[in-house]
Amino acid sequence: MAGLEDLYREIILDHYRSPRNRGELPSPPAHRSEGFNPLCGDEVVVHLLVEDGAVADIKIGGQGCSISQSSASLMSAAVKGKPVTQARALIRSFKAMMSIHEASLGNDGDGEGGEAGGTDEDDAAGGTVSIEDMGELAALQGVVKFPVRIKCATLPWNTLAQGLNEAEAGEQA
Amino acid sequence: MATMTDPLDPIVVAKDFPLLNRRDRERPLVYLDSAASSQHPSAVLDAMDRYYETTHANVHRGVYALAEEATTQFEAARTNVGRFVNAPRPATEIIFTKNATEAINLVAQSWGRRFMKAGDAILLTIMEHHANLVPWQMLAAEKGLELRYLDVDDSGYLDLSNLDRLMNGTKLVGITLTSNVLGTIVDQDRGLPAIIEAARSAGAVVLADGSQYVPHSPTDVRALGCDFLAFTGHKMLGPTGIGVLWGREDRLDAMPPFLGGGEMISDVRLDGFTPTELPWKFEAGTPPIAEAIGLSAAVDYLRGIGMERVRAHERELCAYAIRTLGARYGGDLRIFGPTDPDARSGVLSLALDDVHPHDVAQVLDEAGVCVRAGHHCAKPLMRRLGVAATARASVYVYNTEADIDALADALEAAASLFARH
Image (spheres, each protein chain N blue to C red):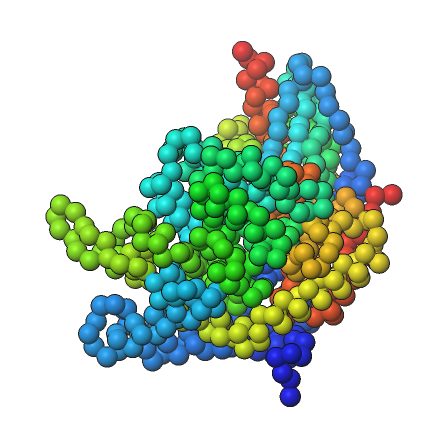
């Protein structure tokens, strides 16, 4: 049986208590996307500045539980300054890390988490990142032992994926 | 020997509930989520088993003795449940549904469609469960009706100051007898008569949602004065899959059927059908027979304890919880709803500092304390309270002061884990 220490790792509590990259970016040029979990009311707002194929800046808004908010904070630190392709690889890898239970629960694609799924299909190109190479993000691995909380952890990532798609579509237009 | 005037002893009562013996991680279960669904005494489980083992056949169909016996038990369950709420005509005025939600939908789709027209208003309260909001919103969209709402004040009581104005043009009032979030009770002793009287003057019918009331208080539809009362089995020690609509016979008689199918007809031709009489007119298809028998056993069990004692026990436990939590957490813990135990049920919605309710519930679970976290199917009320969610503890006949102490201790663990420095 999973214990609380599997879920609330010190890194997670640290990012919850002192969230990184909190705030907003002027839009435009930044892109703003919102993710919402209607079950618990968690909300993540991702402000994304994509320049020259890279995540030039990212700011996080919204409110919610320790898992969704720390996941957003960890995510922002992980993708800031990275090429978009790397950010997408991280999204894929993170969702894969979370998908062990999510797939078996049939939780994908039911309209929650801001309808931002589908990253697997969207990104045939680009690789993935192993858990060992995910750094602090690996701290969220314990969440899969608490199936009802998986959506909390993936909410920011779905929102980021949606933001990247929209930002890139906007750049091309 | 204990008598009906002695206080209820929850430790004795709990022995009747097999599930409450469960141990998680070597800890006893502290079940504080009966407002979502209650547990079952052996008497209910045994009654259902006995029915399946000895009496099951489809009801109202066979002429053989077994089917006759099943029908007799099913109809006896109806009458018994009707008497529990003091229905004047329990054999005809009690409709078995799937749950309280279906009971409300029945009234919306049958009474509402037949008797409401564009421009009519429906008066609800902001503290309704989604089950008493969405069916009316669906009907309003379909028929061009106006939706109006009674507000709550900052203490969690209904604001009736605009009642007469809101009632003007209203054809139906939908009101919960107990908020599943605030615990606020609205009954014949607490605000309901003014609403009933205003509705009568306006020619409006009143549907009461008793889901959080009937399980916890003596219920008398004649004293309440409403036209319809909806409630559900699984919140009053009964099984899931069965709800109840009580309706005044003349109202029910005037209404067209809800669902169509077998059982609800007296004749079917190629060009149409003739509905049968009450109560079967509203019970299309094979009904939840074992569930009705289980609910009847639950009603017997509650009657055996005495509903006055149930209410008194929960009132005391609620007062103890407000005292205990207030003393330990003061302003760090917000308890929503009325602070007067006489005005509220044993539902305690909590907000601990800025710790998210899901995190609170997760830490509580580690201590074996089961509470509900979320919006409790009352999102408009959540918005009114300015929160996305709350953690909600709710008590019933088997809960003790020790359960409240366990809750208080576990909250401390949550507070210290998530404290922002």
